[in-house]
Every structure is written in C-alpha cells, then in structure tokens.
Image 1 (spheres, rainbow, N blue to C red):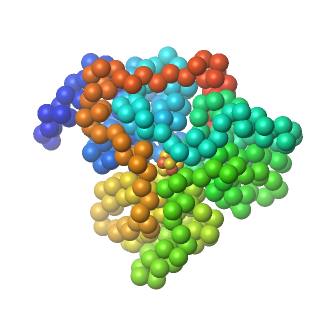
Image 2: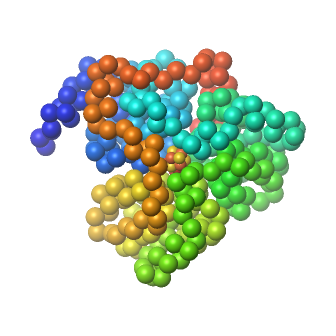
Image 3: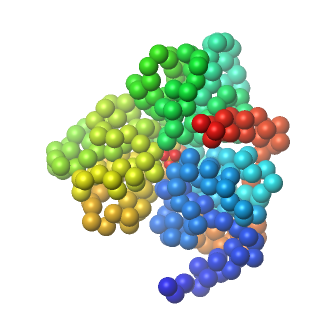
Length: 301
Ligand code: 13P
Ligand code: SF4
C-alpha cells in the first residue's frame, strides 16, 4: 500500500519517538486508519497498560487521555487537540461528590470513566459502558452512588437486583438527543433491522433496543448477528468501523447524534503532536494516585 506523504511522516515520527497512536471508535475515519489501536473506553484503557511505547498519542477526549496517563505515570501521553473534552465529565466535580457522599454515608461510589481525574480520585471504583453491570454486581454494598451518567446508572439499576442506585443528574448531550419517536419511526421503515443502543441513551429509548452495549460491544453484536440491517443508537462516528468491518450489512444511524469534541482531532494534528511533543497530559500526583486505585480496581475485575 502506498502511503500519502503525511502518513509517511507520521509513521517516521512514530518510530523516532517510539510512539503508539490510540483512537476511540468515534474518531474521524482518517484517524482510525492511522491508529495502531481503535477501541472503546475499556479496550483503550487496557491497551494503554499493555503498550511498551514511550509515548501514547491519544485521539479521543480528555478523560480518556487522563486515564492513560494515570495508568502509565512514567509514559508521555499526548493529546493532539487539548480542548477535546467531554461535557458529561464536566457535570460532576469532586466537591459535589464529597457532598453527595456525606448525605449517603454507607454508599459506595461507582464512577463512569467519563469523568475528571479528581472525580475518579473521590470514587471507590470506576466502570465503563462495557462493564458497568459487572462492576456493580461485584460490589457487596447495597447502596451505590453512580456518577455522572444518570442514563447508564438507570440502565444498571434495571438489570442488577438487590442494589439501590443513587443517580447523579449528568448526561451525554449527544445521546440524549435521541427520542423514542425517532426510533419507533425508523423501526417502522426498517422492520427487519435490529436496534442497538448505547447505554447513554434515555431509558425509554433503551427499552426499544434489541441490544444495549458499549461501542465495541455494538461492533461485536453486528458481526455475530445473523441480521443484515441495524439501526445504530450511538454517536455517528461508530458507523465508519461498522461499515468497514461488515461490508455486506447495512447500518442506519438512529438520529443525528454527533459529539463535536470527538471530531476535533485530525491527522494533521497528530503529525504536529508527534513532531513537537504536544500537548502533554499531566495529572497531579496526589490525584493520580487515588484515581489509579479506582481504575485498577475496575481493571482487576
Ligand atoms: P464507549 O466506552 O462505549 O466507547 O463509550 C465512550 C463514550 O464516550 C460514549 O459516549
Ligand atoms: Fe462525552 Fe457524549 Fe462525547 Fe461520549 S459522546 S465523549 S459521553 S459528550
């Protein structure tokens, strides 16, 4: 395969820096093509602990790069565009969480990785969309504060028995856009399509789903399913991989779910990031040490 000059430069810089490029499933297709590994939050966190590269270039949003840094304090973690954040992660602060804990003294705090390092540091264990049910089921405590996604928390509550989940009022602005009516209408137009939804969608939408999974869970479901048509209830970036990996199947976005932060990074940014070693992600040591405990507890499960 002949590489474009830009891709050749990236490949040369990667060797010089001993760098690896990790990209989330929502990233632009052009970025997915140059990445060494593309995955969901859980897979990317695991991959970050496995790599022997000195530099991790993280194409995603800030909480993901912070997670990679917390798990690899000795490595250089770079974000090509440092402004790429997650509005849901900004819906919880460490101070607010401390207040909530005071009101529920016996409760354990489960924190969705879509959160700041400070919030992870205040939590007992982290989870992702791919393992939230398993994490909560593994806990002995019956009262759980789930922060910050109210929809993922409500979904876990529907599945897990014998636990009381105290919900935080956070949400993903992209996923909550999807309405029950949009899905019902699309299901009428595509009656044989399976509807797969991300647990960040509203509860009413999730009740219509044939499967509720993380972004990589959706890829697995689509590949293994005998169905050939799928309605996809998540950010539109996932369609790139779904279509590429399943050329004989058809995928329809359930709505116009777009995360502008996930679309900020381009291949040109990645080249600049490798060239000038920017932007270095740092997490204060006292925060990172406590946040690492919550992340490692999740990864051990
Ligand atoms: P996944 O872990 O399922 O990839 O989700 C990350 C995310 O930000 C969803 O909006
Ligand atoms: Fe955050 Fe939603 Fe964007 Fe995911 S899609 S990064 S939850 S704003």
